[in-house]
Amino acid sequence: MDWKRMIPSIILIIILLGAYNLLKVFVFDKIRPIKWIKWVVLILAVLLGALNGYAANTFGELSWQYYVCMGLFVMALFAFFDLLGFGRKSKYSKGNKKDNDVVIRPKAKPNRVKNKNKDK
Image (cartoon, rainbow, N blue to C red; front, side, top):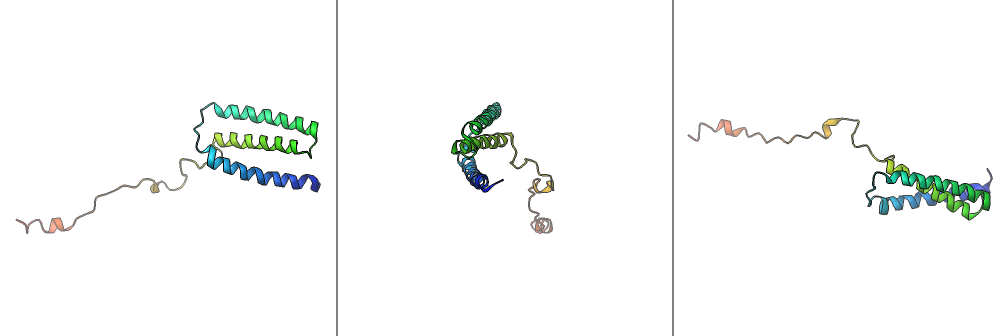
């Protein structure tokens, strides 16, 4: 792989990760997806992948149109995997369960038994 392709790819990766993290914090966490929306996002990702192949054949792999199509394709795949739940922490911890089972007990009052006969 030559430097003419490697440097734009590295720049694209950095921009995509930064943009996706910003979208995840400010947009994706605020919306509640419907159960069928993840399949719509997958179909959109497949269509963007086909558009990416078309852009590579039409414009060439070193053109900005190719990198825009590639970025949209990768963002759609990231969104699909995020909707599926990859990358989230699991609800159930596999470790010690005693941390979650906290029982609140009343404080023992030992002087009640000692002073029971003195009050009468």
